[in-house]
Length: 143
Image (tube, rainbow, N blue to C red; front, side, top):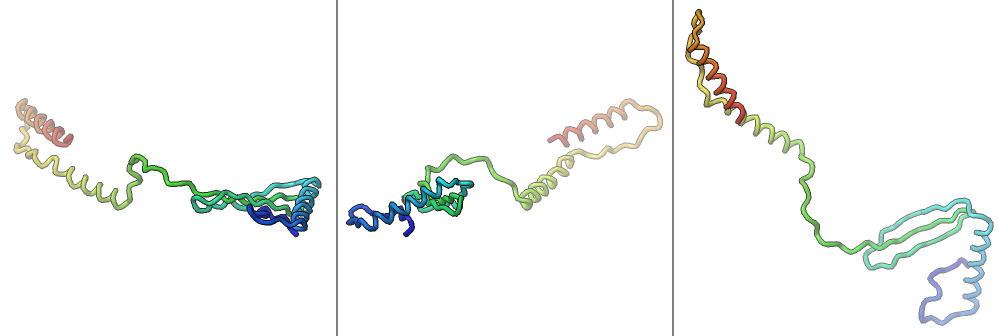
């Protein structure tokens, strides 16, 4: 009979034959271990519902010791602070870019055109007018 780690339960009557089988099974496991464990394997780590007891299953297969762990899920903790926004979707990014691009063209709409013909001779007032209009355009585009 294989070793049963859940026997005996509290409050149950004990039976000498069953105890003898338990001890015999333990001795078989111990003897196998004395032959040399060559490998230890974790077969599974399972999450069990909160409030369930933790459990570890151990078995021996040849010279390999196998473990299975059952670990209870923890209780929910308090809600934390709100973090930074996450990734932006491609659709949101495209919409934001369209919105921004739609506004940038209008930055220069308030700058009037240069209403003059170029004087073939150097005219300081005409050049100053061009410089002033260029400065107005630069300021409008910086908004």
